[in-house]
Structures are given as structure tokens and as C-alpha cells.
Image (tube, rainbow, N blue to C red; front, side):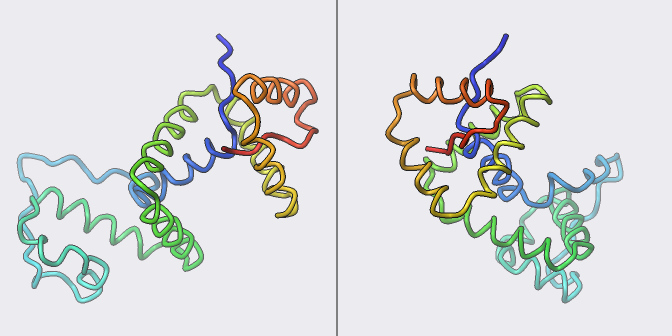
Length: 177
């Protein structure tokens, strides 16, 4: 069944923000499952200085975390150190953006990410290409398209999406809400 494509920029933004919401776990291998020999609790003072620095926001609650949660967070810190500085900065910026969002904006971003992940690979690829074309437009043109998009009714938006698809994506695209 062909579902209408939701607002493509908001979908892709949500997919990207999904990474920001959990910036490291989406890209790292899952730590090995806990065996009967579950990891021992690591006291805060038992962490290396670099680990304490990265985990500083958790200092007050660290000793109360389960050994499994501690092991998972330590795994994430090890992965973080393998990232190039540019990737770390990109993730930091996404985290800051996520933190500045309202709870409703976060809920909407999660819903959009879910819809994006439910699309077929071909639909996701089409949305991604459209997003890239939209991003390549000059900022003033992107803002104009956003203003126009916000003025459209849901039916008009759907017509615009269908026209965009019929044109093979060569039109101006359809910006987010």
C-alpha cells in the first residue's frame, strides 16, 4: 500500500535527531549481553580520569547505577574516544539542539523518525534525496519554501508531494512544517 510521504525535511530531521537523542548507541555495537557473571559495579573513584571527565554529568548518581548500566556507559565512552573530532562536534551540536526542543517537539521528532523507519528502503532513499536537494538550495529559497509550505492545507501538501514525485523530484520540493 502506498502511504503518502510525510513532510520530508521533518522526517529526515527526526531521523537525524534520533541519533542525537541517543548519539552513540545507534552507531555502536551493543555491548555483550550480561552473562551469569554480570559485570561488577565500578565505583566513581575507580574510573580513569578521562572516564570521569566524560561521565561528569552522572557523578552524583554513578554509584547507584546498576553494574549493567555502568558497563553500557563505559562502553559508550570507549566508542566516543574512537570518533574523529568532527563527528564528536556534530553529535554535540545535535545533542544541544535536542535539549533545546520542547517536549512536544521531541515527541513529534520521535514520531517522524518512527514513520521514516517504517518506510520502504526506496521511500527512504527518495525522501533522503529530496532532503539533500532541499538542503542544497540557498537559505533564502529554503525559507520561502517553508513559508509557502506552512500556508498549504493537508490536501494541498499531498498534491504538492504527488506532483514532486511525478516530476521525478526536479521541482522545488516540499519543506517541513
